[in-house]
Length: 303
Image (cartoon, rainbow, N blue to C red; front, side, top):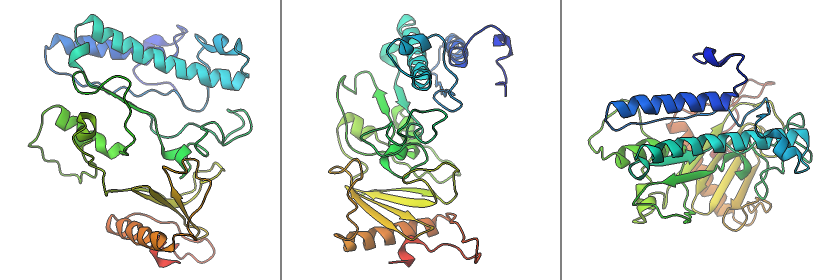
């Protein structure tokens, strides 16, 4: 399906990543003309199935010995990387580089489940993380994230504290100096500005939640109807269909190879109660068994 608004690129040989980049640069030109603060949300189709190679970079990776599938995947990554570089070049050229915050992140783990698009063995493409997009394991929910804030963040530094996508909204508001704001929606996130300024950890003692009550369609480790809670070093995954619970010490076992549920039943019980209460209080959906029509138990309703 064609992307609306990009008709003038049709039959020009312009790859969609480049077309979107050119449109973003036009939007920046327009915003600069107003001489007011601007906000650009740039969301690429890359990297996503179908893996349609970016011909600008495909041969480069074929010459490195990659298969057609992996070379196509890599070409999409480089195309997106060039796009960000072009936007950063615009900021530099227009004297805005030192006055602009850049937040970069993915929306899920890398694709690792379909041999039509990735080389076998599957589920290994995000190693040492297990599996990929759609999985409750770290390969599915841990994402790349980079923040550049001139005068605040320092180059080549790393933060191992956790945040979640809901945190972007309150963070951006605080970055913009907006303190008196009200919206009708419930704001689940918290600002991670203290992490960037190294003044505190807003996620200390905080739980993060994921709920996937449906079947995605792909197969692989950690993929299915699941719900998950992360609190501190602990992560609990509950599989709705089987009632199985898995407990991992993430800092010590980022690959999630050692299920500690039997060794720490008290932690499993506490996190199950935490997760069950959150799901019910937020009106979360849960799957039902086809044979009986009854809903699957909440995580704290099963041992």
